[in-house]
Structure formats: C-alpha cells, structure tokens
Amino acid sequence: MREIAKLRLVDVGVTAVLTALVLLTLPFLDGSTAVDPRGYALAAAAALGTLVRTRRPVAALVVVVAATAAYLLLAYPYGPVMLCLAVAVYSLARRRPLRPALLYATATLGLLVPHVFTHPDGVGMPGGLVVASAFVAVPFSAGVARRVWHEAREAERRAERQQARDDERLQLAHEVHDVVGHGLSAIQMQADIALHLGRPDDATAALEAISRAADEGLTELRTTLAAIRPGATSGSASGPARAPTAGLANLPVLVERVRSAGVAVDLTVRGTPRHLPDAVDLAAYRVLQECLTNVVRHGSGAAAVVEVAYEPDRVRLAVRNPRAADEAVVAGFGITGMRRRAESLGGHLEAGPADESFEVRAVLPAGGGA
Image (cartoon, rainbow, N blue to C red; front, side):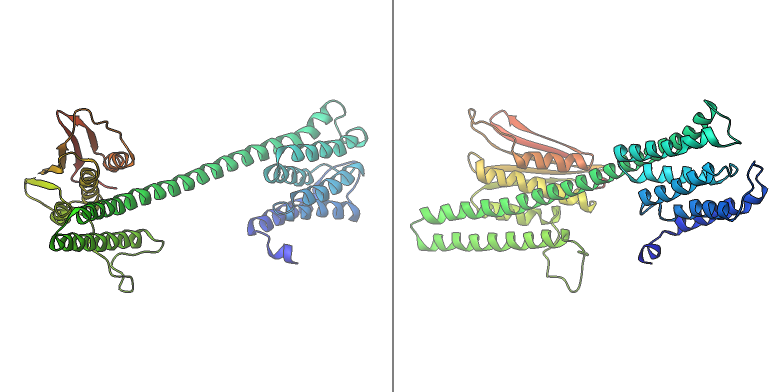
C-alpha cells in the first residue's frame, strides 16, 4: 500500500492506458488460438506489471516478461501486449546502470526467443528473431540514451551549483580581506607609532586612533557579513544595526582613517560626483581601500596620491605611491581581487611600477551591473 501511495500520477496514467489498450483489443485480434480467460489474465498481468516500473524497474520487468513470455508460448495472438514489454525494458535501461540493465535485457531476450520456434503465427527464423530483438534493443537503447542525457544534465547542474558556491566563497574572501586587512593595517601602523613614542599625549592619540580603526573595521565587517548571510534583506527592521554601505561617498572617511595611520594622502576628485550603481560604487570603494591598505603596509615614504574622475559613462580611479627602484612587486590576493572586481563589471584594472612609484589604475562603467 505504501508503494502504491508513492506512485507518480504519470505512472498510473501510462499503466491505465496500456491496460485498457491491451484488454480492449484482445477480442479483435486474429490468431490461431482464441484468447480465453487465461490469456486475458496474462495480458492484464503484463500491463499492470508496468505500474511500479519507475520505483522498482527490475521487479516490473520480471512480472512483465514472465507474463508476456507465457502469453506468447501459449500461442495467443500478437498485439499491444508487446508494448508492455517495451515500456518495461525502457524503464529498466532508464533507471539502472548500464551493466546490470544489459544483463537483464539479455535475459529478457533469451526468454522471448523460444516462442519464435513455437508460435503458429510467427514469421519463423531469422525474421522472428529480428522482431523479438527489436522489442528489446530499441527501447533499451532509448532508455540508455535518456539516462545518459539526464545524468549529463544533473552533472551540469551540480557543476553550476558548485561554481556558484565557489563564487560566493571567493566573494566573501575578498570582502573579508578588504575589510579586515584594511582595519588591521591601520591598527598595526598606529600601534607601531604608540610603541615608539615617548610622549604620553601622543601615545594616547595613537591609541585612540587604534580604537576608532578597530571599531570602524568591526562595524563594516558586521555589515558585510549581515548583507551576505542566508535570508538577509536590506533594511530589515529586526536585523542588527548596520553601517552605511561602503561606497565613494565614504571616501573622505577612508582617507582620514589612512591619514591618521601616518600616511599623507592627496585626494583629487574630478568631475561632478553622482550616484553610481551599487555594484560599481562598492567596487570603486573597495579598489581604493585595498590600494590605500597596500600603501600602509608596503608603501615607501608613507604617501599616496588618489584620483577619482567622474566621466559621462565611466569612473576612473588612480592611486600612486612612492616605490624604491629595487623593490620587488608581487601581485598578491589583493591585486587579484581588485582586478576581478573590475572585470566582473565590464571594466579593467592595471597595476604595476611607473617610474619611481607604484600605480594602480582602474576604469569602471558608470552604468555597469553586477
């Protein structure tokens, strides 16, 4: 009863159609042997055996083949009962691995061959063997082809889901790298200043800057994680308090934070600042944040020149800081992440030595989408 309750509607429908077709056509079939109640029972068993072909394809095939072989060996006329056999073979090949399915199909053909020699209405050898083989080989091939196609589609969907998870992890890694890396770099710079200062008032100022940098970094990290957590919605009244979304509007705050870490930043904004698409605005901010973080960590001379140019269809970013002539440059996770952000929006980013400085230039489309 439990198995019947779990049957799909399409399975019941197909079995009902087969049963009706088989039983209603039996009185009109011409053959050497008239169909009696035993013939009706065998034909009905063959049709009803297809009911569990999806959940139990082997059991369905055993019932259908046994009923069909007995029906043919008793010399009842050929007819739609052969369709039941084809459906059972197809379902077996569709639902089971190739090797066991092939073994069952071979056994099915072996049980059908004897009637070729005994059935009075048969076409004899070799034609009868060809016909019997066709009722097994054709549906078997169709079932295998359908199964291979379905497995390929499922593998493709799994690969897409895995790629989506990998992209999410990479995005999270870049966000956390940008937020935490910038905050920790500012904290480290201020801590170094505090450690080397001999005047308590100056050390107190450095420690206050450390506290502000830590608080701002933690707030931005919480905001980032809250925005990407499962089920998060923007502006939820019940959610935690959030900092303003990172964007170019917060660039002056970022610059002041870096200046408080001991880096002289010269900021130039060309054009009229305007609202950008959220993805572009965030990417532009993260690129500048990562550049300034690298200046705090690795820059020579503790100075940087930042340029932001608003153009009609794009926004240009440039960050330049002094660099020793013999200083090695390695494109690490930060530069890779910046380039990925730009390219994902249809823009581009270049980073490398320029004269006695290190320069990062990026172009982002002002109307770009994520």
